[in-house]
Image (cartoon, rainbow, N blue to C red; front, side, top):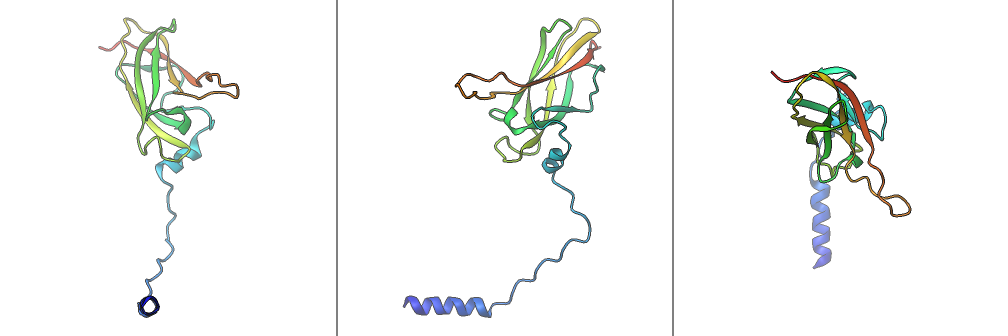
Length: 158
């Protein structure tokens, strides 16, 4: 009985029309957003912001986008902090991946965050991107999280 079923299955496969092979695309295929991100991350170990140059004037709420290595995320986010000229935290929000889950195997993920802060006067400050849960070293001690600090000018909201 098994042999008859096997032979019948082989005959069905052999007699079925072959699916047409798809033709090669004529235009160049652009990479997915995550693949494109991997091509533009300047340092593969550090997160980077898009569109905010050092010493840029920023107001609250501050919408941020950028790229971050996969190991910066823990449970789908990493912290973004705004500090004043003295290093005091005046705002914080989670940065989350925008195009994939943090569990996706891509090595780089686009992120977005919106940080609300209050400053009484125009002053220098920092946007700080912080790696979340960096793991442990060979001795089992917690590693110091990587961080990126971008100097900005904080402008009071009107």
